[in-house]
Amino acid sequence: MDNPSKSLISLAAALQQIDQAIIALPGEEIVPVSEARGRVNAQTLTARQDSPPYTNAAMDGYALRAVDIAPRGATRLRCVGQALAGHAYPHPLKAGECVRIMTGAGLPQGADTVVMQEVVTRHDDQVSIPAPPRPGEHVRRQGEEFQATDPVCMPGRCLNSADLGLLASQGITEVLVRRKVRVALFSSGDELAQAGTARTQAQIYDSNRPLLQAALETLPVVLVEMGTLPDAPAALRERLQHASTQADVIITTGGVSVGEADRMPEVLAELGTLHLWRLALKPGKPLAFGQIQHAWFFGLPGNPVSALLTFMLCVRPALLKLAGQGYQHLPRFPAQLTHAWHKKSGREEYPRGVYSRSEAGHLCVRLLNDQDSYRLTSLTQANCLVAVAAATQQLSAQSWVDIILLDHCFCL
Ligand code: AMP
Ligand code: MG
Picture 1: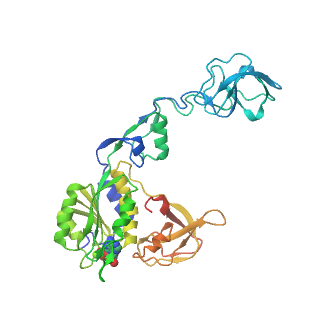
Picture 2: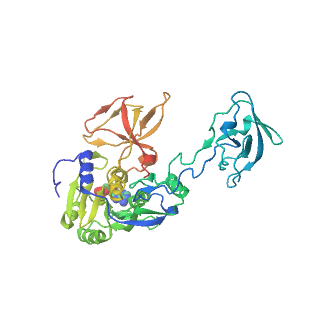
Picture 3: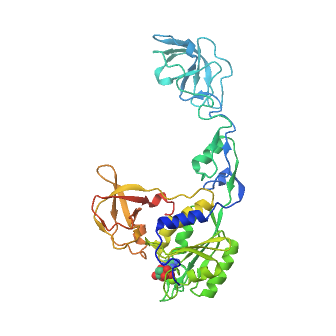
């Protein structure tokens, strides 16, 4: 089958087209906060109470009234009791009094300053503070972080462990989140055998499905259907048609190139719409994006490195947008190449590299020697991708490039 537009599409144009085509999926559900990590918040959450909820000590020491501080020299006070976290001192502080207080304990009524225990000398109930403390010091005032009804978590935010801690600190036990994106994940190719089964001489073990399944598990996604597809068009039609009734997104690997057995694009064009096919990208040229009924379709290349790369660059942002998080690309950081690199293709390239900190203190990156996209070791030995523009031919040593940290993409 011919490429609908003949020429290769730039990655930027493809990403824009995907972004324009898809919108966030409708649907929400309530989940316990304890199960909400990685889910996308669906509504503006407002504080139920001030933070801190009551004025308390930021240090272990003595709580006192600023009006009792001697303007010069030592301040002498009488210690009349103690306040521990969870156990308040029950009486208002009177003139000349102080209370032994521990971090997190509520300040007694009338107290407004805490002096660190390290600067105090004490004999029985007599406390002496050698120099005047700053009025109000070492106190966390009620509502100083935020106040009841202030927004504390916005819709579209992927909830992380800190968010869950914040919600729990507000006494919140349940949260309304966007529903997960239903994904059908298939590998394809007559040569594939599954790990754990016997392999014939003409077969290879399927690495793409476990690889992408693990990458998908880092996203707000639920896998609804999986399997290995043969290269036969009739079977492809039947399985993809069925998957389109079960999933929001169908992801396949293999069969999207221009070989004799690469039947995915023609089957997709028959069943639905092929929106774009073949990018000016290396690795990842054969990527296909389309639609079967209401399901979005991403046909990724069969070589494992190409499959993961196109997943990271093209599928991940689309899944995040469908999940309600917005169309987000992976962050890029400047790094200096340690060695010159010659680029052969006229395509945008993402060779694998190893970044480290240079002696000067910035990031530097060394490209791995073997960049063949069948070599999974080029990914296992790498910790970043290097972004090289299509027009670039020669990169000299010390030139600056953008890198994508693999541990930042949550895929690896
Ligand atoms: P294709 O895109 O189907 O032409 O496949 C390109 C290359 O990737 C071929 O060498 C395939 O054998 C290989 N390949 C395809 N699918 C997988 C898979 N699931 N795991 C490992 N290699 C694969
Ligand atoms: Mg194949």
